[in-house]
Length: 394
Ligand SMILES: *Cc1c(COP(=O)(O)O)cnc(C)c1O
Image: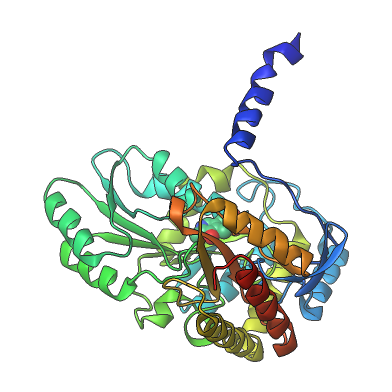
């Protein structure tokens, strides 16, 4: 009987498949590294978020192993009851120091941070103003709020000003929220201008710096450092699942923000805290980022080289300013074909297609890694060129 009740699952999946919107999962055998094995084939990894190549760093692995011996593998509870460990507090202290902020709070994931905090910051009588290309976890956080919503054009300060001025005097509070680095295009939100406008209009600012922390600014402190507006963005949110190579979300800002956030975020209050090895690995990641600037330098050296070469070959890489480098090829089917051909060549990079991007802007999204060597990049570039010529894109 129950199989019949659930027959819609298959119908819906068939529809997804027909529209080319279904996910086919690839499997990594072994660790996520610049060279890895995907579905049984050795490939060069060009699409992980492991920017600084910390997933296999010996100091992170050592810290995780040690924490298992001293603290076990689980925290035993949510933090407000019995799962608040010294390791969690150490991590938050270290994070606040890294971010040059007063305080920080760690969530199980970045998604949980956005979904838990945004609806608490703005409610009935308030307005949330969001960039049209914001990440899905921001969108879900906004959906959970009782506040009214408005959208401004992507990275368009003039449009944001229009929305702010129309809203003036009509709401109790106004919250402006944006990704720091946009994950599909690799462009950077103009937070210098956003901060300035928000202060003119008395609006609260919130940045999701998932792709900026560890990547942008002095020592990888993130977008606020990049634009020299440290301390001026009210809420900074980020993740340990990208450049830091582990997992976990966080917010950083004032002590009042931290206390409010952990008293009100349901995703924090009602969900088990980080296992000790994870918290310890995150602490080690922050130490490595502070003490080993070579990873950030290598990341940007690779990024500059790869972008320059792609451009010179004649590829369209859009307006990217970061290690996220889209190779825009047009139709979804073309992007899918290129990705399959690259895989055959030993290069792993996935297509991003409609509806994640516009119909005629399908792309292969590449992400640089500090662990790529020059020969790695040259091999990838020559594969791109070969495939591009074969399909008459170049
Ligand atoms: C990846 C990502 C998140 C989610 O972070 P997790 O810690 O992986 O849950 C949130 N926002 C943006 C912009 C992201 O790219």
